Image: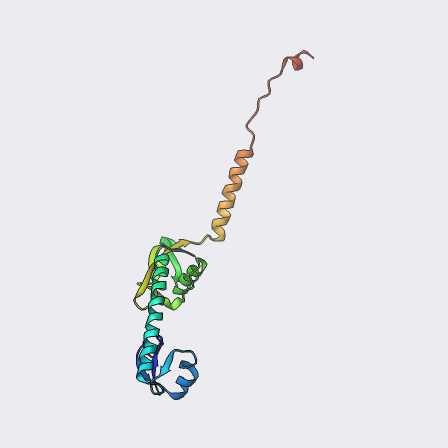
Length: 184
């Protein structure tokens, strides 16, 4: 069955393309979800009309995503990771961790939309690219910091206790007898 795609369909084609697919795939998946219209069932003018409507919808979506991209480019995601010597982290920072960090900031981003130039394997500041739609990308700052371990927390607690003891320790007080004490 020949269909005209109303939206971009992964592994099939982009909006506006005429593709040939299995009848069941078209009837059970593409047509009910309004991802495509049948190329054989209607006249060419109706298909052209559908395409104009689809293009208008696509332009509206692109404008909205451009605004989201502007907001997204100002976001910095902080990821805490266990690090060893020379600030090398154990493992690497994944796109899933970056997507989760963006969700905490209020952006619903799929991990597959996040790309990295190279794997993040040490502490520092990096840039990840978030693809919202074809042609609209947003750079996001990723700040990888050291996760505090139990040893670090214990050392900080000992330092705090020592500081409290030093502040609470009274200085040596020398008592000077007053006149009343000396006369009795």
